[in-house]
Image (tube, rainbow, N blue to C red; front, side):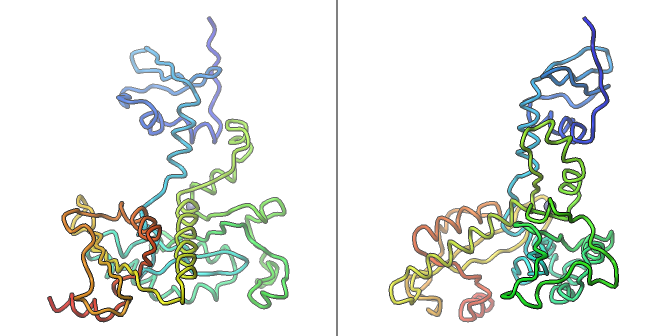
Amino acid sequence: MTTQLLELNPAQAAIYTRSNLRRAIPDFDETDIAAINLRGDSVIVVRTDGSEQVYPREIIIAAYQEFTGRLKDFFAYLGPNYRGPSIWHNNGYILFKGWTYGHALGHISPNAKLQEAWADKFIHIKNQTKLETLLQSEHADLGYLIAPDGFRYMQSPELGSAVVDPQDNNGESQPKVNEHQEHAPYCSCGSFTRQMNNIQDFQQEIPGYKPTCIHLTWLKKYRQLLSERSRVRTEIPGGAVTKCVAWAYAPPEDHISKGRFLLLHTTSGSMAPISHWRTYKPNEVFTQEHAWDLFFSMLGAGYVPFPLTSLPQLSTALKNK
Ligand SMILES: [Zn+2]
């Protein structure tokens, strides 16, 4: 039997990694791997002792796709003060890395402080390359430029001056955008860039493949949450919100533990004094990983969420406790 070994192209090298093999195959042994090769519909793992194991390509592809588009927790991409993505130009947004929420002292970390100082100023940087360099520099690592609906460069009357002419940057042209990509989603992160730059190889491996990343997945979920929240609010008869949830989050004290996610609920409106609020499931411990599901299930029950920090009567009462 002849074994035809081909060098992996960039897409294959991103898909058939030992990490994705580990994700796809229970008890996969990551040690003593001499080579990962492809043969027909199979992935061949060659061990240093010459032995081989054969796995179906499709299960590694599935693991790659699941991992690349996985949903990170609610706090993973919020800026200081639970700030969501900031609008930039051309239908793009700044997505902040959640430096404030990774650790109890995250809010005083240099990265969070830089985010705070810069958050409202990114709009003044109209050049995409300059913006991305600033966001993703080694020292700052503040976040990403993301366009879930693609960039829009056409002059549009209703948007007026918010639309930036891509040529209008001291003669520098905008990179990474051509006619084909104009309406395709975009993220400036390394993973998305790698997929975009090797799209033909990826599509050869996975027919119809479209680049994605954890940031696009997160933003999609965040938008769903906002639209669900406004749907619930507008459907309340008379418009007065009585069923409310106040949520608070305490980031972990160390790098092993999880944070604590706390919910209080009332049927007396968001201004109700603290005596009218009850802890939601006081005997259960919630972390950042429960936040998405809890938000959606509360909204499903008609409860509108508010950050506890935005309700002075609660934040003051809890501070004094
Ligand atoms: Zn991304």
